[in-house]
Amino acid sequence: MSANINPLANPKGANKVCELCEKPAYIQCTKCFVTFYCGKEHQDDDWVAIHQKVCQLLIPVRTPVPYYTLEAEREQHYTQILDRQKLLMEISQRVAEKKLFEKRHKESLPAALLSLHSAMDIYGTSGVQLVPAYLLLAEANIGLANLSPAEQYLSWADWTVVRTPDCGRTVRHKLHRCMGRLFIVKGDLEGALFHLANDIYYASEQYGQDSIVTCGGYYLMADVFFRQRKMDIVNSLYTEVANTWHSHLSRLLEKHIENTITPEESFDEAQQAEADQMLRSLLDVPDGGPKQQPAQSAALAHSLGILWLLDGDPERALEFGRRALGYCQMVQDCWLTDPVRRLLHLAEEGLDAAQKGSPDSPPCPSAPPEHQRSALLS
Image 1 (tube, rainbow, N blue to C red):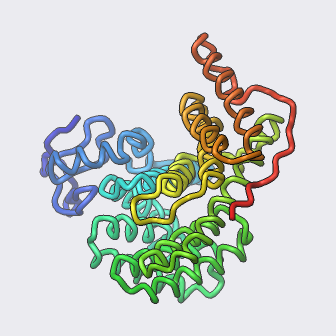
Image 2 (spheres, helix red, strand yellow):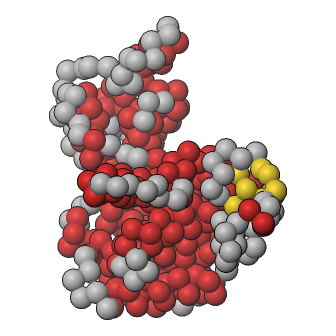
Image 3 (cartoon, rainbow, N blue to C red):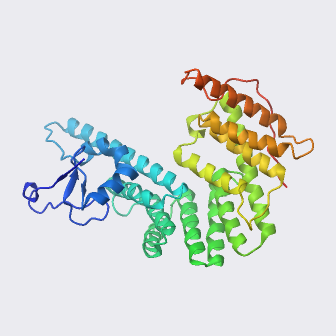
């Protein structure tokens, strides 16, 4: 998968550098021949993290432009390359986000770097479109406890936003959320609360107060109050997060059953990982954390069951559905009992279809619509 580089084969002044560290490169990928590394370790790291997903996509982007005599051909080629660069940026961004939600911070770095390089190729070195990649790199370094590079990336992101007065609320909320994470790690809890409050403000302005995007800020803010041992506030914020996710996922399940769900409403891999990580952490609270009531636990397990059913994994949906039913049985006249049994029925049908060799069968078979109200967890 790798071959040594012959320096004499390069044009004068065109020395190759490593994809990950930008040090002199000595080997190249033999599948695309356009990606270079300082050594086998960085090649292996990049392959596992992102390169295997985009190897062939990089070839036309990094191959010298052929000579076209007609302007129309040149414009067509430019448009095709631009579309591929945007696709590269989107793929690498989603992969980096997914790995961050899964706490695989080291693996997220190559994907985040590719996202940054692709954004620079498209928008230049000072566009606000670079900010999401800066934030991914900052968050990865925060997770690795490399605070100095994290602060550098956040500084670049902040400066880019400051000099872009018309910068959107989405970018601003993401910037403040990442700043909040940095301040939590540094132990500056008041600074973290300041940035997370701004995160929630911009997210609620863009998406609404009851959005799953906004509740990510509540979730991080609860972590700050937990460190301050303000457990009443922690319980209140966790309840808000759990209710928001349960309501959102219940609506998605109804739309999926009615076959009215839109691609924009479906979760990509990064969103799936975020939802799974957040809901699991609320359901399986470690020692010393706020104890969940059975009704709360039932709603969280039910949410996870719906999440995995929508993702096409009826086996995991059954696992969480059975946990939810167990919690429901601890509560007298629990209103979630019927919705949970319905989830179990759908998951069992999906599992039966998969075992009979019907991979095209939908994970959520059609069923009569049933009105569900969101959980009021108090």
